[in-house]
Length: 363
Image 1 (tube, rainbow, N blue to C red):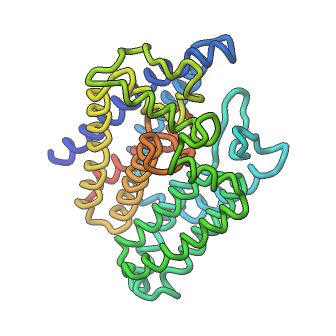
Image 2 (cartoon, rainbow, N blue to C red):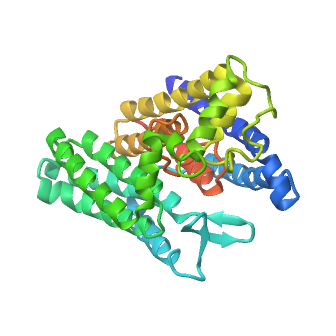
């Protein structure tokens, strides 16, 4: 009975926030869509197709015993790595917003890095189960899986897609932490990460301008600081109840493509503090429920897999919200369930399907 309540709560929260995401994608995008495509429903129609397919797959996957992913983990990851390499080839991969991250299928785009996020969590969960006794040994236990993660991060950075790469790395670090890796090791990794970020900035100086714009966006209000400033202009005036549905001002060509990374700004502007509370409550319900499923699961693979999926959703959500309110530089990370992005919505709903199945088989 307890498991049924957990499943129902997770299911209702996910479907509710996804439907609200469709509504807000229309509100945020119809002006831009009508101007660019002469079709105000362009973005919401595309997202709606992925939503329908995603919900269907979520229910199908919720019926499949999650232990099957243990057997197929290697194949899934190898397939995703091949797709990550193929998308880099001109003529196969499609460039959007400066990144060669998509396979173009008509007006739709499939982003293989989104599928890699889930495949690597499945693989790492299996790895932790099989190497449980080695995780105290950095060389034999930690470095192989960390090296693989950094290899995938490197391939994704060739697109380049720093935001998705960061989510992948942090998700695996979270799994390694619950897998018993010493906290001191992560402190050392943090130092290496700082050096790595400095290297990435040296290779692509535009990243430095993003950091500087985060520290003081008003220094370059029409350039590197433009998005953050417009986002804050959307959030600030929202008040308690906002301007009302469809009444956002910043979506009128001030905030660039507000249906993607900055959709939370439009939610804040149109629904105010009340909208923020509702959306935050739905996210907290999904995340807390996911961690409960992980805690209650008796099978080690299921425990790691459910934790990894939930942690990834939580980290991506927090990362996006921190960008939107100007706490960190712009990363290009979407808000799960809400932002426009078919691949992101599809793989997130599939991940929820796995969580639902783990809840049913937790004993």
